[in-house]
Length: 418
Image 1 (cartoon, rainbow, N blue to C red):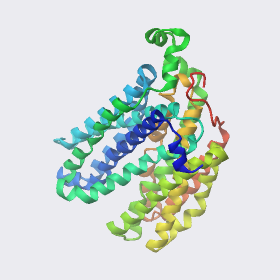
Image 2 (cartoon, rainbow, N blue to C red):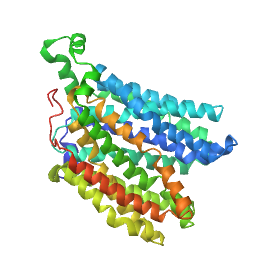
Image 3 (spheres, rainbow, N blue to C red):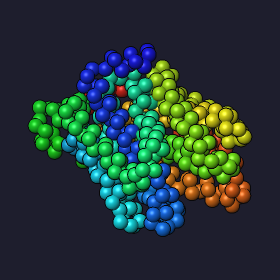
Image 4 (cartoon, rainbow, N blue to C red):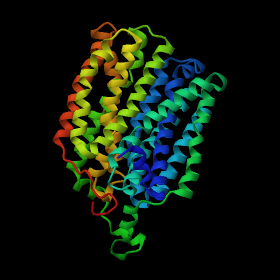
């Protein structure tokens, strides 16, 4: 089925829910990457080192599991729709507060709080989207939703290129508060998750009584501990896969190839286009090939891309390598939203996928530091071997872990019994 047909077959309610969740994730990523582009300018303004400002990136990643738990718990108890609105307002406000940070210390505090809000959006949005969408074509929408992260990166890059010279880093953060207006769209167009509403109607109980009748979150987590631990391991492998191929790649291009901002920006943009297309294509293919098999194929196909990606010497060949590498990496990632929600028990679906996702980010958050230290201490600052070894090892890890797990493709996510 063509992609346009997939979208047109949705009801207005399903389409509005997906659009809201996609934009919420894209704009969340947009707000995150604004800091990535402004690290040097912030360091200059606060008369400090880039490494000290970069701690804000670590704090954001480290605090994301806290947000996944808090907002996920709210989504399971009070509903996906109101929680998503509160979540978007929170990350927009902390982005706005970052624009007025009087010192680096305060900026770090605001970015840690932003990390909490950022950590909540993916799980809540994915639960609302996949509990509303039909099972048919779920893989395509999984790939499209996940690549909202890439879209946010692209938007941040475009805004940085066009307006940074006029507004500076503080102005960039002011622009980052725009996502708050998305709440108006959600309030007027988006309906609550059918699965969550069904849970409240179970047994004919009033909403308050139904909530009291549910097992506690801790009882649910203990009951589903093996599944949860598996998802954390899987997402740690996935986070290492994406961050291991993305975070230090621009540094590699600048240091080992002596490329300037123009060439580096071009190559990374081409890689982002490959990521976007890969996520959508492999996500859609997972409908016929299955979730685990698709992850296996996409991750293993990243290995043959290593020579072009890390060992080429011209802008054209490296760009091709970047496109193909991210096509495979994000191709595997495109299956993740559907796969995690299908494997997550209905009573804790607002908490389970997002918390597993963000704990994976936390456990892999120092990988970039380790890569940089290894390149400096063992290879004289040459990142080629380190990046190549990272892809080879982590791609195999993703494939093996995914293969060892189970699959629930096509599970009915609109029902409490799923």
